[in-house]
Length: 95
Image (cartoon, rainbow, N blue to C red):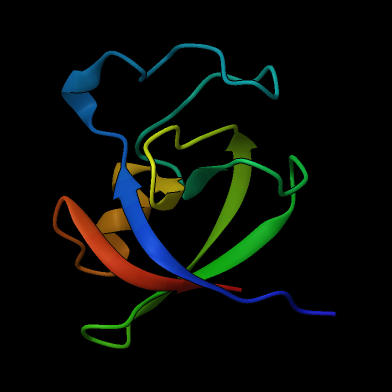
């Protein structure tokens, strides 16, 4: 079964201090990998995030928990955000 969410996504960035730190799953965060943080999805599961502004999708693996900012449901790595031509935040769809 596919659960779809429409929400605002945000991104980790290179200068924010997370690159190389351990994630909630125990692995080291790599901002250049196609990964993301989600509050409830299983670690290691894959989700497709689509930028609704341009229709570009990216498939990312959940490695961390977050985001912890009200109204946002997923934090993308820089690589994930770049794949969908995301600015700082977007409205998107998580599948």
